[in-house]
Image 1 (tube, rainbow, N blue to C red):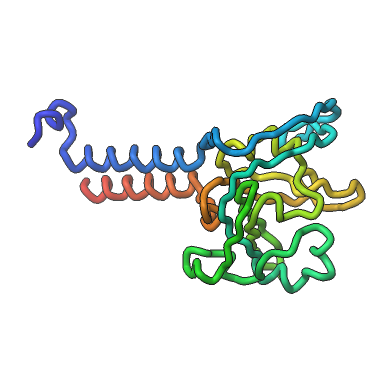
Image 2 (image 1 turned 30 degrees about the vertical axis):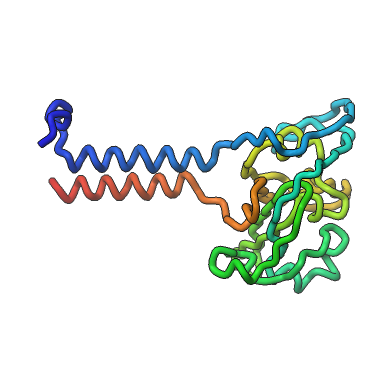
Length: 229
């Protein structure tokens, strides 16, 4: 038995489980930390004056400053879940730009990546996901594409700048009404998750849940310990 295990008073199996536990937590935390991207195109110009502050995002509302993208290009998947295609003309065409295709493969590109086209972007890649209640069932849908080619009126650039979308990889929940700059009479308080990234086809992955994965690992370790008693 190694000397270091004797000094700790733990058998090697317990030490191995503890190391695996710490490694899993560190990996999960790393996946949710923003990754700085110093070479991504920056904002240019635009002065603003603040007014009210959002209770959800904590971001002051400003007059949108102009955003200028550089000459960098990156390939991003362009698709929407099939559900969006069924209601496109009557409900979504006024808000979104049409993707390259509507397909259920957009919900899980890893299963069939060649089934979703990729386009060249001069901005960054985005993936958006939301849950809708359809006939009592919760359905999760996805939208993927270039930041500059998703919305007809563009995103709220105050939020984009505040959360440094053009400078780091991130995933965060936003209120759609604020992020999409919807009219004041548009009654929609739903939330949408937006993940930003800057690498070829990086918007093909789905975000993971740190609390659930860590809890599952903790329960597994506890069960293994109890079985040895």
